Structure formats: structure tokens, C-alpha cells
Amino acid sequence: MHLNQLVQRDFENLLGSERLRTDQETEELIFMQSIEGHAHNGAGTFQKNRYVDITIDDIVRALGKDPGRIRAARQKLIDEVKEFAQATIEGEEPRRLATAKGEPFLRAPFLKSIDVNPKDVCRGLYLGGKRDNSDVRRQAEEKHKVRIGGGEHYFVNLHAMRSMGLDGEKLAHQPHAESMDEFRRMGMIVDENAYRHSNNDHVRYMYIRHRTGPGQSDDAAVMIAGLLYGRDVAIGVFLADAIDTLEKYVTEYSDQDEDIAALVDSGMKDHGIDWDEVLQFAALSAIPEGKEQHVPDSSLRYLLLIDRHTRMTAIESHLRVIDKEAILPMPLGLNRIPSLDFYSYVNRRILEARTPARPAAELPVPVAPKRAPRVKDVMNPDIVTVKPNASVEDLIDLMVTKKRDFAIVLDRKGRVKGVVRSSDLLRIARF
Image (tube, rainbow, N blue to C red; front, side):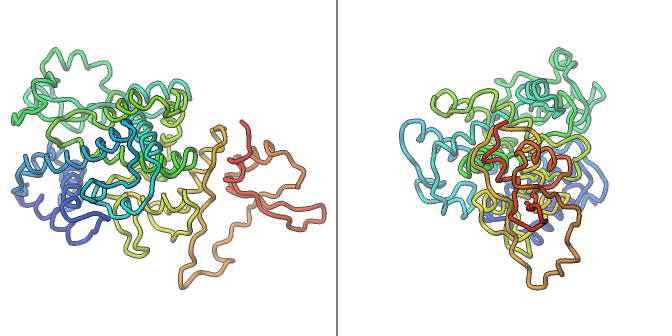
């Protein structure tokens, strides 16, 4: 089957099988980028046939869409968030995540219904924009002794790339920090000012990895921001992640999430987040080595994907947990990680890092399904127990060692006196 036909069929399959919590136009904009990933990885209709150099522009053209219109539509979604940040910096207080015409950001209706603190949203835009920067990740790796990896997008001359024996997969997955000067000298990386508005067929905006590593989890970034700083900061991080996705195919190429972070940093002097917190946030959002298959890193598509059973999206579930609302368990990300396992992981992650206490969400209380299994079928007998007079520090060490999110408090006669959750410890512990 011809490549264009594969692209068209993959697009039709996505439209027929998935629904995102947004309008149809935005859904299609996101699906186009998902098809690029399918082609790179041989997923979907590509059936293990990998097209590693295909770009979103190739997808758009294969679908018979107008590249200029698609780029402009994606840019508009970014500009609306930027205008929100600019208005906040200038002293306005936009309480709704919507345009002047009442259209919700990302055309996601649930965002429009939330009354937000605009400065907190901007704090999230700052944190989210900074944590994705390759140099910020490198500093976080050095300070917190973690391995994250990182890279940046560049304008790449495809002719020069191929003459050097490289392709999109090698650039994206192999480390090239030591080769960047050579790439420029050989004309593979071209001047961004000359090509920023270019439609040149042999120049593409492509990701080049500097350092290898397991990367960061967008789900974890949203949750950790919410646990440490509050729901509206988490929303800002989510919007920054969305911008990082959309900016890959727009009218004016740059790291626009980072540009907005810089705008907030320079214009909102009272944002109150110091550099150590930025590095800590980047480190906490990192996926631990060896856990890549167990920690979700949902793309924008998966964050907005409506789960068939719960009718909930991942991002709505995350925000509900942060707001201490009941949720239904659901799978997260490409690997369909159970959401309750993930929320437990996030709480442990924060405790293990010994972060300063800030108001935190309690562990979610799942709504019982109609045909729930019996307790004996799902209980875990390996529990943590503690006496009322035990120190908080000892309890934290025990819970971290046992990898448990709660402890049962027993008196001298073994009678249950109460329960301590990991979120309770986040509120009172002083690390």
C-alpha cells in the first residue's frame, strides 16, 4: 500500500475509534501528529513498517490538507495561552481559561468551567516551560543525581543529514551532544532565522537528542505540580506541555513553551519559584531508570482521550485527584498504566525525595464499580503498622522501604486507632 494511503487509513482509524475532550478540528490537529509517531514506530496501519524521516508536514500533505491553514490553526491555540499570560502580567485577572469569544483553551470544554487564579496558572506555565529545556534537565541531573536525557529541535537539511548517514530515528534516539558543532559545519543544522518561515522541501524542524535517558513523565509533572503547588499550577504545566506538542508544526518555529516561561519570569517578578525548585521539579518529573514501562508519559492525545468505561480523560482524572475528588480507576498513557498505581507512585516519589511540605492532595478514593470484586480478592496482606508515639521520620523511612502509601496505627493491645496516608505526611513533615 502506498504511504499516502497508509496515512489516510490511519487517520480514518483514529477518527473512527477515539474521541478526545476537544472539538473536531483540534482533535484532527492532534491526530495528525499521532500519525507521525505511528509512522516512526511502525504502529497503527503501518504494521511494523517504519518511516523514520516522515514529518507532520508530510502527514498533512498526504491527507490533502492545506499546510498553511493547519500551521495557523495550531499556532492560534498557542497564541491564546500566551495572551492569557500577557494579560495576567499586565495586571488583568482572567479567571477563565478561555478566549474573549468564550472558546476554551485547546477547545477543551472542562477548562472553561474552572475558576482559576491566573498567577498560579502562569507559575505552572513557567515550571512547565522550563522543565523541558535540555540545559535545565542537565542541571537537574547534576544536582539531584538522576538521569533524564534531553535534546532540542533544530532546522535540519535533509540532504546533508542523509549524506552523513543519519536519519530521523538516529537523530532522535542516539546521543549527539558532542557532534553539534560538526552538524553545523557540515550544513546539516541550518540557521533558524533563515528558515523559520520556510516551506523549503529539504529543510525540516527535527528533534536532535543531546543525551540519552528515560525522559520525563508529563503525567507526573502535572500531578507533582498539583501536589506541591496546587491545582491551577498543575493546569499551567498541562498547558505548557500542550504548547510543547503543538509548536512542532506552526507558522513560527521556536520553543514557544520556553518563550512563555521567559515571559512569565521577566514580567511576573512575584511568581515565587526559585531556580532550585525548577531543578527539583525537573528531577521529580523524571521517569526512574528501569521504570519506563511502569510510569505513564501521556501525549496530548492520551491526556485528552475519553476513556470508554469511565467517560473520563487522564487530565480530568489528575485534576480531580489534586482537588481531592472521587475518581474511577482508568488506564493511563500508551502502556495503559492503572491510574491508582500511578497516583500511589507519585506520592511515594515526593516522599522519597524529601521535598519541603506544601498542601498536597490525598490519595484518590475510587468509586466502587457496579460489580466490584470481594475485598479478599484484592487486599494486600503486607501492611505497615505503627504505634501512636512513633516519630514521623521513622514512619516515612518505613513506608518508603516497604513502598506503601499508608500505615495503620495500632495501640499497645493491637487495636486500630487510625490511618496515616502519605499525603498526611507531606503536610506535616519537615525534611
